[in-house]
Each structure stands twice: as C-alpha cells, then as structure tokens.
Length: 401
Image 1: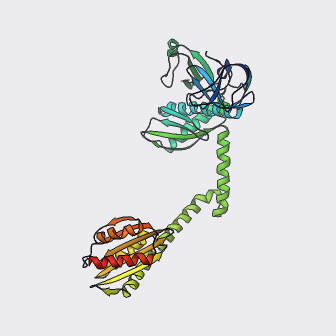
Image 2: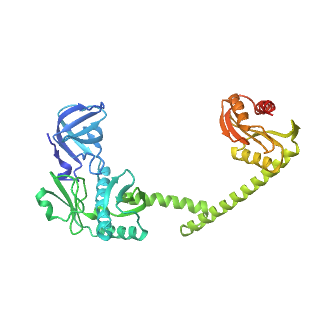
Image 3: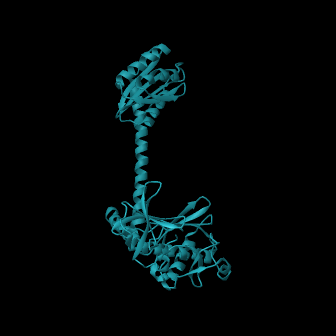
C-alpha cells in the first residue's frame, strides 16, 4: 500500500497522526514501521531522510522500499495508532539547501550553459558537479551573485504533478529520470526541474547562498556551497578562526595574508639555514671519524653507534666518507626507540661486497634492507645493542676480506 505522503502535501508539516500498518524487522535486523500516512521524507533525489520521533521513539532512518515508506527505530513500537514529530531544524535545513541547489545550478546554466550532472546534500557542505573542465573565479562570483539576486527577489517556488504528455509545456533544465508520478519544482521564469525533494514556498526562505570553493573532479568541476543557516554557521566559524589568527600573527584581518606569507618565508629561510648547517656538521663528522679510523686488513675502518639520527643523515655521512677518502670501510648504527638502523659503505678501492655483508647481518635483528655493492642500509628490531651489532659486522667483514 502506498502511503499518503504528507511531506508533498505540506513540507512545513511538523507533526501528524497515523495508523501503523506494519511493525517489522528488515534483513539486517533493524526495526521499522510502515504507516498509512507520513510526513517523514525518505532518502532520495539527493536529499537525506528526515529524523524525529514516533510515539516518543527516535526515528533514525527513513527509506522507501518497493512503494512503502519504512521508518527505522531502535525499539519496536506498540499499538496501532501513533503520533509523529519531524525534526524541523533538520527538515528546513534540507529544504534550504535543496532549493539553493536548484537556484545555483540554474544560474550556472542560464549564464554560461554549464550543466549540473550531480548533487550531494551533505551534513555540513553541499556540492554540485558541473560538466565543465575548468571554472574561473569571475564565473563563480557571477553565478553566486545571480543566485542571491533570485533569492532576494523572493520568487515563488511551485510544485506541480504532471503527466508525460504535459512535459513539453515546460522548459525543463534536464531530462527526466521517470515517466510516471512526475513532479516538477518551478521557479517561474527561471528554473523548471523534475524533483522529488522538499523545498520552501519562496526563494527568500533560502536566505542566502555562498560558494566556498571548487575543485577538479575527474572531468568535471565540483562546487562546494552552503545556503541559509549554514552560511551563518560558516561565517561564525571563519570569524572565530580569523580572531585567533589576529592574536597569533599580531595583525588585523586585512593584513593576515601578508603576515602569514612573511612567516612562511622566514620559516623557509630558517629551514634552508638548518639544512646548510646539517650538511656542514655531516662534513665535520666525516672528517672527525676518518681521523680516528682504525687501519686493519689493508683498509681504514670507521665504526660508530648513534642515537636519534635519521636514515638520510646516516647515508649522507657514509657517502661523505667514502667519496672523499680512499680505502674506507664505514659501519654505522643508529638507535631509534625500539629499532636499530644500519648503513654500511666502502670506497671503490675495497673489494668487499656490501650486499653480502648486510645479507648476513640483518637476521641478527630480524631486519630488512638492501643496496648496492658499495652502499647498503637496513633496519630491524633492537634485540641486541648497537655496539654488539657493530661487533658482528666487523666479524663478518673480516670473513669477506
């Protein structure tokens, strides 16, 4: 039985009485009731479902399944009669956003011929996908201005049920997806669109519309926007952020961009200075290590355990040594939390295969790694000390020499 859909008769209806026709569980074990009439809008047409209560029990989801509107509740309902209450704040928000989408889509199409191919009404932000590869700022601004002008004019928003034969009388913005139960939402002399959602009676009740941003989405452009009370919420949140930034950056609103740019440039310069100092420190560390290298088996051995270094720093240190000094064998270990990292390298005039070395060493720490015949790196568990690991590496190199 198809219920009487009160949300189409009067989208402003907040409460109603009805008869409970079914009290069931679906295949997922969710309780639901079917009523002979309902003001609860089910998910569809890009608009989320209503919430509210039936006999004081929360309705958390509403779906239309094979012609029946199912109201999902956490607990089953008792009796045959019920009273429903719509969460009006949620419903009216959806009405504002959905009508705003019609207006914005019509503005883009009317001014530029940009067609809307999809719409999403999110909890915080709404989006439309425009069938265009790019969108310029002046285009977005002009469409937004046109949309808000239509809103300010407080034009009527009419709904009309028509037959397929009557469709030709209306300049529809897009092709219909149904041939039966055709419902048109009309803003006279501006937008004619097939839609099954809920909308306010006039454009003025949308209040305002603001485009927030846009981005490339596959071959289309996705426009993010808000309407009505969501505009005020966005303004409030952004104003709070600006007020905090005023204090953090010691600058008024009009100077925030310049202040932030200046700080970012200073940070960039500081990072460059730090990188230069790190490079110089690694050079100095390489010189220091080579001065204390131990001559053995026809080469100079450098071995050192560190703590808190990065793998990149170890690698650069090893390369500084083998590229600037002859006959050098470098064995470096670093300790980070519960991990051990190692870098082993040799000068070109030494014939030890570093890959063979790391292949034998990594099992000692349940590690993984790799590299070339001259430089290898890896890491594993800290199940032995750094010094013990270096000792084992020295033992292995002696067998490879």
